[in-house]
Amino acid sequence: MSEEYGVSPLMHCSAYAVAATRECLPLINGRKLTWVGVFEKGGWKVILESGEWQAQAKEALAKLEDPAFFKSIDEGQRRSAKEFEDYSLFLKREDFSSYSNAALYAAFDKLFSLNVELNVFGHVVNLPDFESNYLSDRLTAILDAKLLETGASTTVAQAFNTLVTPNEKSLMQKQDEDFLLLLRMAQENDGLQKTLSQDAYDHAQAKPGSFPEFQNALQAHVEKYDWMQFHYDGPVILDEAYFLGLLKSELKQGDSASAKLSELKRKEKELKENQERLVLQLRLGEKEVYWFGVAKTFSFLKGLRKDAVFLSARCAERLYGEMGRRLGLSVRQVKHMTRAELKGSLQGASVSKALLDTRIDSCVLLTENGVEQILVGKKIGESLALVEEKSAVGVNELKGTPACPGFARGVVKLVAKSEDMAKMNQGDILISPATNPNLVPAMKKAAAIVTNEGGITCHAAIVSRELGIPCVVGTKIVTRAFKDGDVVEVDANKGLIRRVS
Image (cartoon, rainbow, N blue to C red; front, top):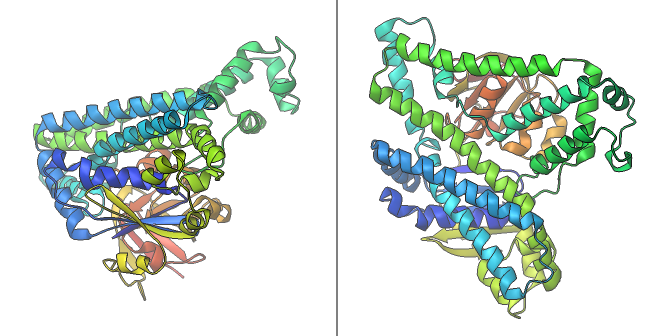
């Protein structure tokens, strides 16, 4: 199987590969996993042999029968994410110019090790519901039986959506809420609102004491959320001008920030009440409630891990930049070195810029038992022999897993990476191999979202529930079955997407 992503440095893939193929195995009594990361012309995808992945998924699901194991994964993912974020923020502030080459590599090695630990827990979170959809299938079977037994007035998709939606806020949701607090501050100060509405406010040129509370709050917001469109590889770092532009746009629209904040609180309370009501209405037992709790927690933890990875990617740019400066390499070239090459080059070994450029253009990262090889040229074809693509010729209807219920009709837009977002119009159907946080602006325009990969705890499922957009995941071949411009209907209550014209 394969999952395509947007642009990403080889270094991130390497950390996950080490975690998945070696470091994670003792946790789940896992069998071997061969990891193949294919990088080509600005994009990448991961290829995993289905049998190996499914074997690990079954082991993880069996271990999750024990609540103590689930608790250890939950706590481990939260702890590792916090440690990774804290160290990343240290790197963002640090001046590396005085570091020795050895100290510079040590800083990188610690970052890489923390990344591996983060992905050890993250791999367990991903396993039960990635390709196999074992967890989704288990929960769907529970709901099917309970609806038949109780005659409850809801659908599987609606109950599913409610019960697996996290009660904890993602960083995207926190940013939205914090932004509304900034907007409310502006709306409650006539002078500030007038200044912003006239496009006259520029923090860099503002006189000392001009709206100091707002200035401090804006600075804090930029510092906290400047990474949210950086993804794995940037180069977008959100600045003050970006958030000011959003504020000015919202002020022109005139919607009350206080009303929106109240609506968010109402929805939070409503979600919790609906979850409690469904548990009683469907007469879910303790074990059944436990499994829905696993899914709900894993939905949150997936977002937590990705947020930590993207925050770190932004914060580590200064570290990569200093290593590149000393080695006479670009940041992108540095990110396409192995750890051994990076350490050796900082100790004086020569490095081939031509080889690094070849890797940037096209290479494969092959990892078995934590041991990595980077392949280029003819060796790439040999490493891809395990890939078996499914044919999508003549397919007019596909079925996947309902992730957020609803119905939509619209024009297909294939969106795999940030450069594809420009073609999205309001009301289009966004089809993607697998979404990521960098694609959220396009996702907000979509009438529905459909993906090849993922289960109920994947990024597309989580974000679609946050936004209330119909979503179907795990179709396997939707990006090959449909093309830009096709008109389709998405029935996310049944998990169907069908061609209209």
